[in-house]
Length: 193
Image (cartoon, rainbow, N blue to C red; front, side, top):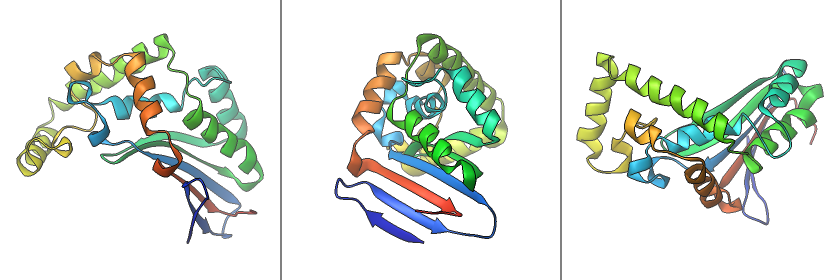
């Protein structure tokens, strides 16, 4: 693979692979647990989810229709260190795929109804995890190892912290982490760049 750093600081990773007529496009923002306020833990995961929904140019239905029409895989991604969006599709659809990913990352619209829907789903998922002995053990291990460091918190937050997240919190987090030096863009597959 090849890594390029653009003049504005954006890091670009290229992995050419002509084995199949497919491409993948991903964008990661340095936006993990350390970027969240403890009382809003889970905001990075929720923000990632919403990057794949409504944007300034497209509604959730329009994003979904484009993904279906092109037969794309289109998903949010979140970790303890990043939040982002990635997609995969046919090489012939590279431009449309790249536009969808860029649109989601650069111009998300944190629509109140979408935020409420996704916030409720994430809080419910956090509640379900509290019933799983393996997840509870993992959370205790992380807390024991990392202590009060943000990496000691559950990635998706707790039901209480997630339910406290509002549109303004997500917009503020997005503004804070969206800057060129904090952005990694990846391209893989049959690339014609």
